[in-house]
Image (cartoon, rainbow, N blue to C red):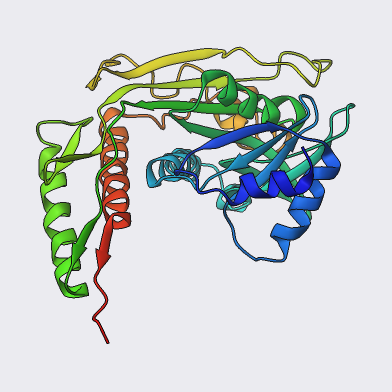
Length: 320
């Protein structure tokens, strides 16, 4: 494949949350990236995996994808700030989203971006503490590759991966309206109806006007990942240290989940030398509660459904 063929694939319309992997050389990737850099558009993005000699074409995330990544990090950060540690220490913990990095893997340069991370700043230097990856109907192997990149190659202390699988929902047809006012009124009506449906279908499906705008959630799993050892090979595909099935077949099933996932502690967010005593380092960060999760997740389901509906609404242009 030459770089023009790769560029054609990048320009081909992709559904949100799609990741397309194609064989390519680093040189072909860089030629395409140079072209994209001149266009000043955030998506689609293109990454490169030197361990597998693949270009990865990345479509924009859905609100559910980006929203859950941000919600997890915000929740953990909030717990740190309410932990009793001095604000002089906690204020140096910052939250990143979609940060792009390039590293030499020993087989060439790999370029990727993560969904989000917490970094701790000491002066001008930041330490990657927690990385989060969310996969929406993404393969389990692909999600593990993404979080393994942050843990093994970037060296974060803890990786959190949330795997979300939505059932197929079909392809709704396009709707045409005579005016922008009419189209906006339809969206408002649909929004109210979709939120109302959550009382009976907490995890979908969400339907409106005879079509499905968000499919039933088949499952949601949340996993933690840690470095195996200092000499861990760079191409290691990590196994989770903890794994929790939270939602299955449209029902919340994990009523006994530990609020800190049995392992997330203060020392995962703040470097050890800034904490007084081993006991403080091991203080649990109780960030996960069912009510918080359901409010965030279900609200983002509706936002995703509304975005899909909005993309299918067209306003007819008057004939001159």
